Image (cartoon, rainbow, N blue to C red; front, side, top):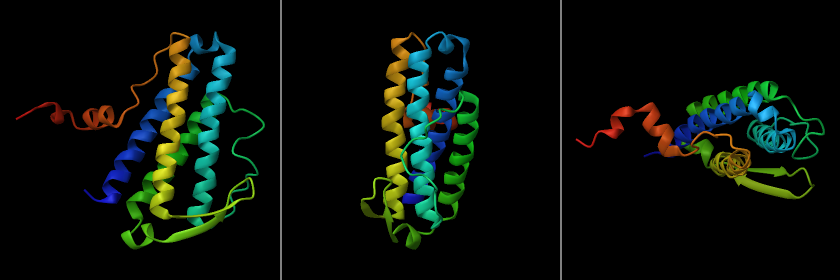
Length: 169
């Protein structure tokens, strides 16, 4: 399996998971737990901001962020739309990137001023694993207030997209 192939699967999974988590946070049941809902939105907004920062690094364009989160917290609906656009960008990027580009090392500055360098491939894997880590935090919060988060695993996505995988023959 190629790097581009697995990245494509990871970003399809990520798009599905972001949408599912934010759908749960749009429900009236989530609104009955304002503190936990706010914390979950802050975490998912952090994911969005970090994704935008690394999009800036990948494109060579300024990202405009001075921190890894924003002062204001978007509504679940606004954040869902923002994540959908960001996830679409990553899917399109992965579909067009070449192996030579994936190996290219990019120097950048983190929002805290520290310098860093990663290959495009490392940046893409960072974005996917970073978001997965934080969705785990949100999933735990949702379970604590008796809400059902999506089953956030790549296996779920693979079997949802290709139900024939359930056949053993």
